[in-house]
Image (cartoon, rainbow, N blue to C red; front, side, top):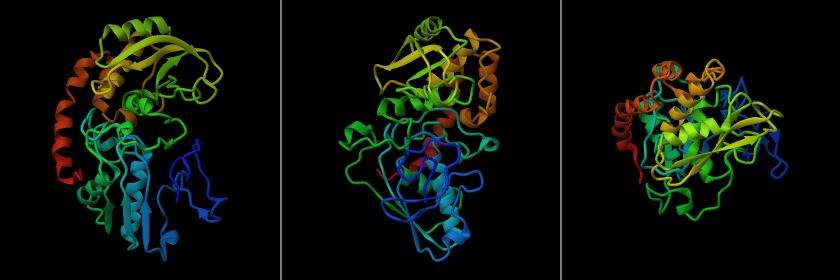
Length: 326
């Protein structure tokens, strides 16, 4: 079975079809099609065990999390054992950041109500939490990692970076993704179709210098911005010249990525009123909170919006405590 980006993490299409693997000669059943996001009963018939081995990036909206949940539900219904081979959270397992997900906003890019954007768990820990809190009751075994620390970033592990998806190309992109990804469903480029996805933001209707000056004046911890022009070769504004900002991480431990998302939304709305639309393609699913989405659109101070997330973050920290493996 393969998730959104195919069995080798190289597909970047809205619909991944079944295929026969050239190396193994086995049929790969896609779980990323409009009609198929979980293994069907017929495919699970006769299966004894599913081994789940995917690299998450520590952000609520990454679809591998929902793929695991739906696979677990299907396995429970068909008496199939689930074994999750745990992997590091590349942006660490300590920081928790962002608004909790509304129960009415759950989707394939947000499964568990109350989960902040940066959840601070590994896939194995998430599997345990889902299994108990959502009462999936799957026959679940998590094979824990050896020698991983909660405060470790991916480059502390000594492991080789392998792109989990075509646009998640390095640890810097993963660090910024919880924030930049918040606004991706808006009418703005987040760098898909460039060499540095999720490290820049722009659009044809923006002025990069003004955006950089506004964001730098906000003095966001661990971040600097400089103006750029770029022309994406894919995704939004493909072939169109965009102006925007490149985001420089100066201290990753100080970065609060979801605050970055709020600041980007606020700056874009201020500089391009009537042009920037954060919910152009269903932004509620990525922001996760209808109340916060309304605040972004009304122009409320992003720092005030972000400060209100502390209650949801505290609730999540308490809930997750009993499922920690490290």
